[in-house]
Structures are given as C-alpha cells and as structure tokens.
Image (cartoon, rainbow, N blue to C red; front, side, top):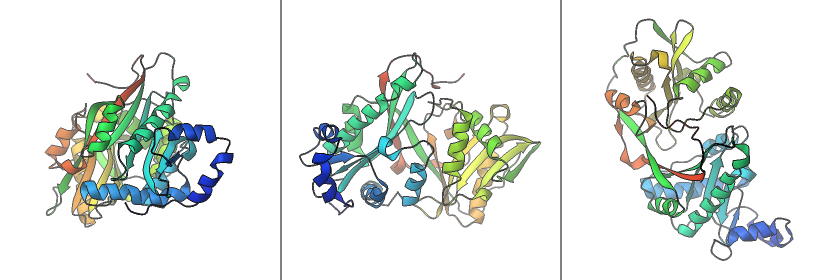
Length: 364
C-alpha cells in the first residue's frame, strides 16, 4: 500500500486520551481494525486524500481522476462543513485509507447525498465504517425536514467497484439508478447547429446573467429524478461560490439560448476533464419546458461540440441519468454520443424515515 500519510498523526494519537471527544472517537473505532482512527477530514489531509483516491482510480480505470482543485471548490460550497460533513480513516501508522463526504446543505433536507472511496487494499471494514458514519450524519436531517416527509440517504459508487457495491447492499441500500458518461470523438469538423426560429445564442456574462441563468437551470432540472426544489438564494450561492469559483471556470464556454430576452436553455461547460486533458466537458445542459421539443437542446449541444473542436479538443463528454425521465440519453445518442462503460456510476438509496415523497420520481 502506498504512503498516503497524514500530517501530525503521532501527535493526534498521543492526545486522544485527553480529548473531550474521546468516548465518541472510541465508539467510532469499534467497527474498525485495532488501532485505526476515523475522524473528520482537515485541509492538510487534502494531498493524502487525492493520492489515495487516485490509487483507486488507477486500479479501476487506469488513469488518475481527482485533483486538489475540485476538492477545494467542493469543500468551499456554501454551508458545507468539513468537520460535520466528512470522515477519513487512518491506519495505525498514519496512512489515510478511506474518505467519505455527505451533502445535506439546504431545505427541505429529504435527500442526503454521499460519496466516498477506500484504498484498493483497505477492505470492507473501512468502507463499512464510513457508511455507518454516513447514516449517523444522515439522521441529523430528521429534525430539519418537514415532519411528514420521507427521508432518503443516497450513495454513489463506480459500477465496477465491486467492494463498494457489496458494502452498500450489506448496509441496506438498494440500487436505484445508473449514471453514464457519454462521449463523442471530434473526428473532423462537427456539424453546425440549426437553431429554431427566433432563438439566438450568446455567452454568459458573469454578474449580469447569474440570476436568470440559475432560474433557467432550476426550471430545466425540475423534471429530473430525485429533484427537490430548494430556496433560490441557496442555488444562486452555490452557482456563484462553487461553479463560478472553480479555477477552470470560463464564461466564454457557458452558453445561453435566448428567445428575445428570455433564457430558453443553457449549456455550461468546462474546458477539460481531470482525467483527460483532450476532452471538453458539458457540465449542465438544460432547456425550460416551454421551449422543449423544438431542437434547442440539440442545437446547444452541437454548438458546444463546435466550440470545443475550435479549441482543439479531441473529445467531448457529459454525465447523464441512464433512465432519464426526460429522455436525455436519446438526445445525446442522436447527437452522436455513446456511453463509456468504464465510467458508469451506480446510485444507491436507503430509507431513513418513511413518509410523503417530496422528490420527483416520475413525470407525465
């Protein structure tokens, strides 16, 4: 196992006996091998976390997947708290071998989303301990949610990660969704988009378009499985402080399809992906209901392809719910994209409290 050592581990171990949280720490350790430590992540763990996660990615896919920049942006998401919302597992000799985070940042606190990974040589006990913590973290949502609401804990893992899938199932999760990475190779000049009558295009202007872009995204994604409406200001904060704050944010790669002064649809793109510098990435593509089935989404996607080709990218990728309620996978196939099976993600769900379902499960 590689050296993913955390800073100050010896001193941390030495002071546990005098720590006011010793009893809680020892309780957490009961499900771990002797001498292992589980605690919240810290900023100075970042390098060890990235190295550990990339060791797993290289075993699963043969390439590194994670960068420090992505984690810094994610950890700076409004209302995210490292101490409350993350855990790492550390071996007796100070190597970091597991990481998990949980996102439950906004009302109505009914779908709590988690993700994590362990080092390839770590074993089930490590991931099981992280899921035990995730459940306890999820239970904190109960007093915050509407009293009649059903509360679900969501987990994600790469489909080829057999250890994670087995532990999710053993922990009482059910497999509910598959998420795909779809890709197109830009062999030659992509076809120019054909815009519906009355639709024009321009790039996003930071500070000017924030509010109506976020409103368009809210409406565009309101028909997605699991969608739960949250306060507009919370979504605006996340867009401005997470998406716009990323190091590779490029306003000229964020496109607005306009009908007069109304935003009909959007395509938000990143210049590259972490594991493939030759691949452009469509982060979000959405069209508001009144403009659907008119070719706006296809035109936005094709315009994104043309722009990536102009910038020298060899491929373009995006992520999609394989069982998309709006038929997004068919649109991407029509545009010439294909799924890359290596990157398929499994979505697991575990009920924390029965009740009225507030999230979107189907559409007419």
